[in-house]
Amino acid sequence: MAGFDSANVINGHYGSIYHEGSWMTNFNKASAKVDIQKAELKLSGDRWVRHKVLSLKGTGSISGYKVTSELIQFNAPVANNRNKSVRTELIYKLDDPEALGMERIRLMNVMFDSINLADWEAGKEVSEEWPFTFEGFELLDPIEE
Image (cartoon, rainbow, N blue to C red; front, side, top):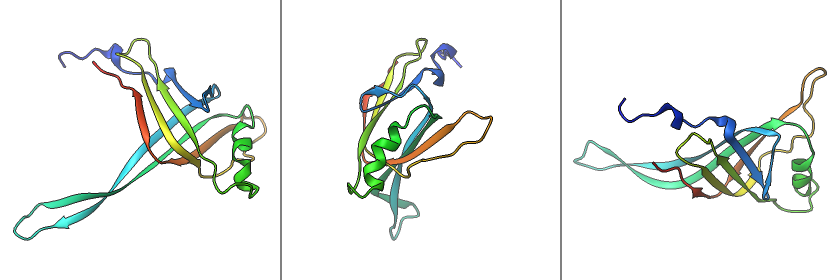
């Protein structure tokens, strides 16, 4: 493959997650995607099924090692009926020094799907996963060749 440099492949080891501006050092896995929900349009005299975008749905998750109760505390107002909803933002960053550049993506209006109170087993390190939805994103720093 001409022009391909394997050093430019980004290693997830250099990924980081920021919540409320603070690096969440204990989290080591992140995902986010936007599902595009479409309607099929069938026109007479045309074999092609056309599509119209109706809505967008953002989902994702973060996971890593249990170190603090930060996210439980952040989400507690929802569980204690003190607030209708708690929204925040997350920033995902990939910054492999061998790659072509750094990428940062801001996820807006993040709402966690559940509050992880306890999930542990004797003799094993405690990990946790926080699935969420989001409403909008911004590509802060794109990777460009």
